Image: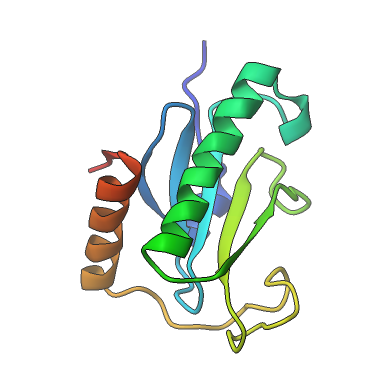
Amino acid sequence: MARFQIHPQLLLDCHSIGNFALCHLLLHKNAALPWFILVPETDALDLLDLPEKLRTIAVNEAAAVSDFVKEILHYPKTNFAAIGNVVPQLHLHIVGRKPGDPCWPTPVWGHLTDGPEYSAAELTEMTSLLVRHCALKFLK
């Protein structure tokens, strides 16, 4: 059996943060908004094609990240999507949103192209907060 690999475009655009039971957690390099991407270890291309048990796990892991964005990062809303038009590998977006953010009220997809990147200190802090809040296994 081939070893699971995350699509190269996701690895180019994101930092690897950690793993849940099913999904790898990535953080988009653009720090204008907290934009997380979950990549389930599956060959399925669409969320709704996952067997019910795996779909439930994936959605629960996305809900944990959404809770983190709301409770710890203090964003009142999260956008959730499994689009996959550019990167065919199944991946789930969880993006913190609030009035006045760089894209408000439009969607981030296609509208958030420029922005600062996370510093090493910010990335370390975000990872630490996520590990504590979401019980992630830290990736070295």
